[in-house]
Each structure stands twice: as structure tokens, then as C-alpha cells.
Image 1 (cartoon, rainbow, N blue to C red):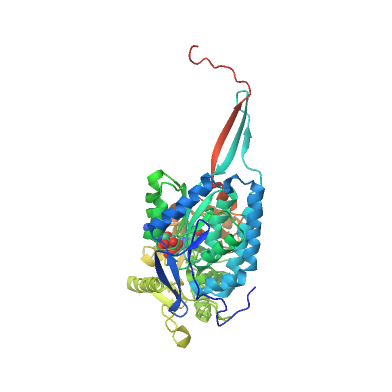
Image 2 (cartoon, rainbow, N blue to C red; image 1 turned 60 degrees about the vertical axis):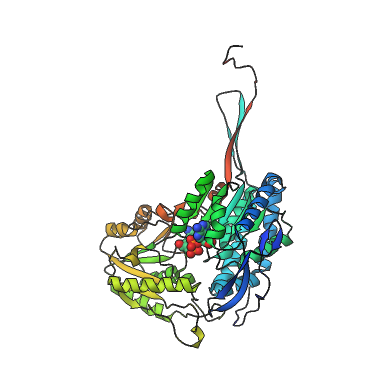
Length: 500
Ligand code: NAD
């Protein structure tokens, strides 16, 4: 893995282009990317117009309808994905540094993400060759099987908080199943996706199987979601955009999966080891500066330990080392963009106006190191009412609310009291209570005495407005397949339904 650095090693002053039909091409326009750690220009990237998005879609269509990829055996697709995983590992240092420069997160996190992305491709390389389908005894002389086939052209739109990992979550199952793809990274963090395209080109992926289009949502994402030539749209991002995508997908009733936001509760009962629970609480909210869809952004704490919990968490939050992602001392980096920083600062103001008490943070670090960067200190609000906006809405920054409860019933009610249902955790040493509470939490991803562990092998996605469908695991592969029943008549005699 990469050694930690203070000066970037990776070269960003180069061409960053679209990848369409196996070729790197200039965009219709350019965007200047900003390094969130410094607020200074990082590099320029090409961006597509609608016509270029259509070219990419047509390339994916041709690759699916006439190209070799869907016709390869599962073993051949699997072999390609294994090679891809190995190449990502080989390039992990460069990819991690690019991700840190582009998105701001500390190297220790981006290094982890690169390993995770490689593991995701490897997992689906393995799954591609595992048995699928069914053989069914039907009441006729028939051999009847159920097979899974690729859906076709998949549009994939991803956010900025885990750029390469989100690309892996989308591309790995889609390719394993034999689909072709048009991937749209976030306009803020396209660099590792372009680097991935270079790796795919080096590995000689057939033209048009993966296309990378860059640019903003309305210009590039929307035509992808609306296109009549696209068979499935897979989206990860905010609820607001998810609803726009779902509407746009109605044009041809394309298949839709949505991985959306969260306001996930971590419920802490009085019988826990306080230090351990506080340690997990910090991990739950401040990883990636809180820009995690499943972040534990609502602490629900038994009233008997509430004062001690708040005190300990505030003490530890103050000690978190905020700084540039390339600095080996840094524990929490800047936010991804000026826009996101302003959004989070606005929420902090809203919280204060709503009457919540700022226990710690709420401000920005000062000093030369932080000048012009998009930093916000770890922030804790207490004395929160459940209907406050800072309790109900996703802030997507290093801001947590700590609420208290008097009973298990109240804890469950509070845990389920938002529009979201992505994740949730319970901390207790009582095993029956752990089961009861996890069962009652309306969320797709839950932990007992833990937080944030995710596995390529397990389904990821939310209840309620946190999304439609699941990614990862066998569920993730199924979401990139159509199901076909095949009936083979073993005794083809006239049926005489109509008189001869
Ligand atoms: P966003 O919704 O603003 O953007 C996500 C993507 O959608 C970007 O690529 C953007 O360009 C594109 N987009 C925007 N408008 C569009 C439109 N009209 N048509 C098509 N595409 C459009 O989200 P974001 O700010 O990039 O990411 C943060 C959000 O993502 C948070 O809500 C977070 O919870 C969510 N998220 C969810 C998961 C999950 O697995 N559930 C994972 C990561 C992030």
C-alpha cells in the first residue's frame, strides 16, 4: 500500500477525457476540478453534451446487441473480472492518491476503498460462474427451466463520496451478468473512473461494453435515465435526484434500482461498555467526514448514561485530527466541495436556530493548513427535539445529533421516526434485547455492537425512502438480470384447441 505523503506523487496535470466506444475523446466542454484540501485548481476534465451521451448509449447498445461480451461464457467474463481486480490492486497507490486529491478523504480511507473495489470485482468474478436458475417439474411432458439473462444496456449514475467503490458496485455485477454499461461518475469526482477506463482499455475490454460519460446531472445523467435505448438505470445519490431518475425512467419503463440517503440511528442502551460505544459512535459519524450514506447521524442514548455519553463523545470528537487527506496525521479530511461545506454549515445554523445546543464543533478549523480548504470540525448537537430538521434531514457532513430515550419502546419509535431506512445499529450486552430491537428497526443494513462493516457478499440498500432494490451479494447480481422461463415440449402433438 501507498506510504503516506504530504506532496502528491500522482500526475493530475494531464488529459482527462470521456471514454466512448473504446476510445478516449474530448468533451463538448471542460470543468475545472478543485482540490477540497486547498480550494485550489486540481485539473481540468472533459465533459459531455447530450449528443455525446447518446453516442455512448448507442455504443453500449451495439456492444450488447451485436458485440461479443454478452455471448462470452460466464467463465470468460469471470476471467476478465479477475484480471481487472488484480490490475486495480496493482494500481491501488495511484488510484488512492487520486481519490484523495479529488474527493478530500484521508489516504487511509481511500487505500481501504481501493482494496474494497478490487474485492468487489473479484467477488463478482467468482459469482459469475456459480449455478443460477431453476429446473421445474411442471404438469406436462416438458423440460422446464428458469434462466437468468443480462438485462441489456445499463445506465449507472454514481455520487462523489466513494467514487471508485461505487463504480465497482455498479460495474462488477453488471459485467458479470453480461450487460453493457454507460457509467456517469459525479461531476466532482470523475478521476478514478477515468483511470479505471484506462485499465479496462489496457485489458482489451471489447469496445462499447463500458463507456464513461462525464458531466453534471441534468446534462449527462438525465438523458441516460430518459433514453429509450437504455434497459436499466442504477442510481446512487440523494432522494431528491432518485425521484427525478425514477420519473425519467418511465419513458420506457426501464428497470430501476435506487440507493439513496439515510439518517441512521445508533441506539445505545445503558448496559454497554461506554468507552467502546463512544468509540463506535465516532467511527459511525465522522468516517469520511460524515459523507457516508449509512453514517450513524442520530445517536439515541439511554437517559441514564446520556450525560456521561455526551461528555465522553464530545471530549473525543474535539481530539479528532482534521486536515488534508495526504497528511499522514489526518484522521478526518475536508468536505468534498465548497457547495457541500456551505450546505453543512447552513444545517449547523438551522440547528442553532431550531434551539438545539451545540455541544462541540459547529465551526471551521483555522490556521495556514486549512486556508481555503473545505474543513468543518466534528460537530455534536444535544437537546434536540425529534421534529427538528437537523434530526430529520440528511446533513451528509460531520454533524451528529444525540437524543435520549427512557425505554426500549421509545428508542424503537425514535429510531424509525424518519423518512429513511438505510441502516441502524444497537449497542447492548443483552442478546435478546439486541434481537428484539434489530428486528424492530425498519432498515436494510443493521449492526449489533458494531458499525459500518460492509461485505461484498451481503445485500446493500434501504427500506422506505432510502431506495429501491439491493446491490451487492447475490441480490446485486440478480438485479442485473432478467428471468426467463424455457418450456421444452417433449411430446409435440396437435392440441386441437381449435377444430382442425
Ligand atoms: P446527488 O443526488 O446530488 O448526485 C448523485 C449523482 O446523480 C451525480 O452523479 C449527479 O451528477 C447525478 N444527478 C444529479 N441530478 C441528476 C438528474 N437530474 N438526472 C440524472 N442524474 C443526476 O447526490 P450526491 O450529492 O452526489 O451524493 C450524496 C447522496 O448520495 C447522499 O444523499 C447519500 O446518502 C447518497 N448515497 C447513497 C448511497 C447508498 O448506497 N444508499 C451511497 C452513497 C451515497
